[in-house]
Image 1 (tube, one colour):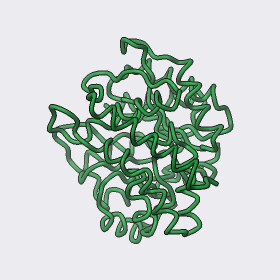
Image 2 (cartoon, rainbow, N blue to C red):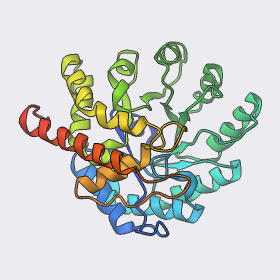
Image 3 (cartoon, rainbow, N blue to C red):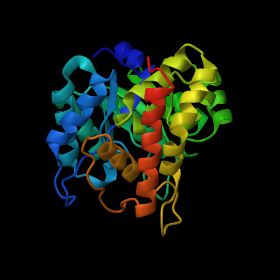
Length: 313
């Protein structure tokens, strides 16, 4: 796929796909994965991101990562852009990019480096080697302060760097990056629906979603409203989705670490929608009973509002 087409598709909603494990969390339900991504594409989704954080990247083996991307590509063919997550060591990331290319993926999402000790010169080299080693499109994933504006500006100059997933709750920093980095990249709001209107005003041309895997029509309607600059409607849809997104952002029971509910809440939503979510793998845990009940309440509110009050278009 041409890099410009990938850029075009990124100007919309990118669906970060959960990985459905069997009931014991041991093997991957590839039949369910195929059905789940078909559900998104049939609803109008055009960008899929398997093996990201929502896909429990760091709980997968390399073989599982490749198999997941193969399943997604086989399930959707040319109907969607497939962007597989890569990360870890430089060699691991490059090897995965090669394997994804063989599987038919269109691009890679370079996961935020998970290393206790980092150096900015080393970070530039890390990204440079990965970007130069692949012909696939590359999306850079910013999740923390390590990827500074200057570093992003340097990496973004490569022709095959097609986008930046900006997953930091810093609208001011995002606005400055968009305004000052002169590169042919698509800026995507990486913290989903709650902040989609604010980031759109500051130059985000798309956003990533987890809950879109089970309420795709509503999430796509939000994107439509943002593109049309129908801000009242965008806020209405954002407010409809906000309770579920807030639940995802919470630490969960018996825990002080942020956003631990994120992935299990998505998988719970899949089940509520009649799809297959399955369990999470360690170090994640399932939702508490109380949070699972809240998920059901919020999901039903989304569906009821869509049916009774909001025309999704």
